Image (cartoon, rainbow, N blue to C red; front, side, top):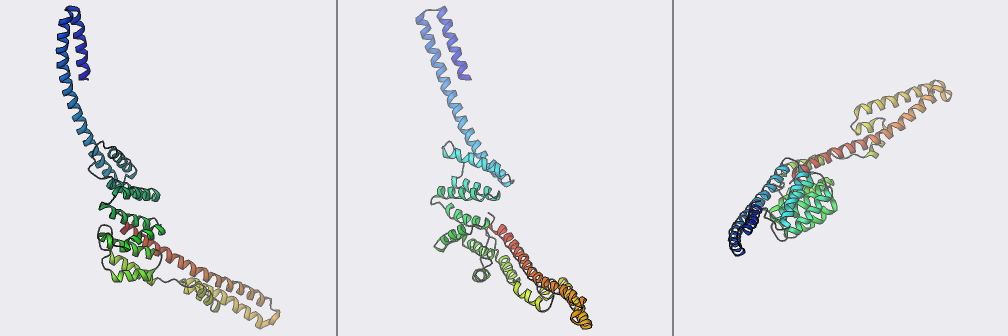
Length: 330
């Protein structure tokens, strides 16, 4: 605005002088005014350019800080948008953000992970790994990739990444990698290998270095104590003694009810046959009912054992997932 004002004043003065004086005097005065205005113009332009650079740098620093604030507040979608804006500024070299692109991409991957978007999380981690090059951040990203695969039940990705840690790698994260391996084995109910790892290593930690050996050892012991039972054995027990398979499945009241129902029908049928022999209607009727209840009791015992195993499986899986959410979180 200042530059435009100076230009307009120069043009106006030039027109007035042309009307009032000769051409040679007009040219001299015009040159003098031009030199003054051009010097002021360059100074103003320099000041405005310098102010713009300072403001842009300040805005970018505030952009990163605002994105971090949104991330901390759980506003992950908005945080992703702000991080991506800062990545754009960094890519065109407009100004410095104070962080490398791989560090910003790591934050974006964290945001996608907490939004439960596995494909976008893995894609962002791939970008971060490419951006990291040979920086120390690369080792961290490899570990985070492994943890993300476990959190989203991507077994093939987890095993592929885990093989990379068999070679000399990031020693700083080895206790955390061990914890992830134990959780992977527990999630697949491979209790013996998980127990061996825990016995040989006491330095089992989460991402932030907190020791988790006690929690994982307790979980492994609890899983070993909660053994699954055989549905076939449950059915066989009820075939021999009505209701015994239900007791085997942990359903004592159902077992007692089945024993009384089948046994009661069998006793009434016995009395009918004892009194009238093979011509006893009561005997045949209650014998038939008793046979139906007996078959139903055998089948019900098989189902009861299976349901018990499902409940144990769900309970164990819930315990493992809680530990995964606790230890894997980054």
